[in-house]
Image: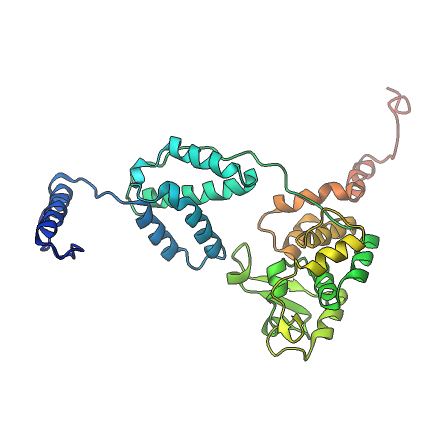
Length: 326
């Protein structure tokens, strides 16, 4: 029956009898309010963070979440969830904007909102979640190389980075997936590589078909390491954004280019070659087609054939209104 609670048994965290009695009385009062009056216990941000991290430890972004939560702690530590309001969130929002781009700020805000929503909808710890807006983000950055630029870059890179860069452009795999690629996820006979869902950004397993460009790189790595595909001096590669990478870019005369832009290069070249959106989405492992549409502008001529279908439908190519007697 409601109100029939178990005996109150909990460590008070103190050996002082007077303090222990005070803690006991506070806990008893809280239990009475909950049982008799239906008052929900108050929960802190720290409690929500601990539960969130336990429930989301499988996420690929788990470590990133922990780093964000450490930054948020000076603002939210010690706060009860119902005390986190729009004013406090806006203060956090504009404080973070001083150091990072709006898109990065949005990742912090989205994490806060996700935790508060779960505390409200699933854990029933709070009655409502404060409403707040994210920053408006510019369209995703698209920076790619021409084939000539890429050849120049390869000529300046150390062999291990040149191999990894070539493999990245050939497959579209992200930096971490290339560095961490293991032989057990490569099938030389079927010419495929697999990225487990736990290591893939969208959380789903990804199959990457290996074209001849990629296979040529893979064959060079055979026998160099028992488990990892890409190595340097016998050890797995742990970093690609090195002095050697930056120096090679400078010697090749390439500015404003990051390793992740090799993935943009992969997508750009595919669109220029006529690969349709739905195929490119699967090849690159993008979660939605909208993310692939960023590359549509690089090959507008690919739509020319589609536009000409209406000519065939109407039975003429370039008739003017005067030609049709209008």
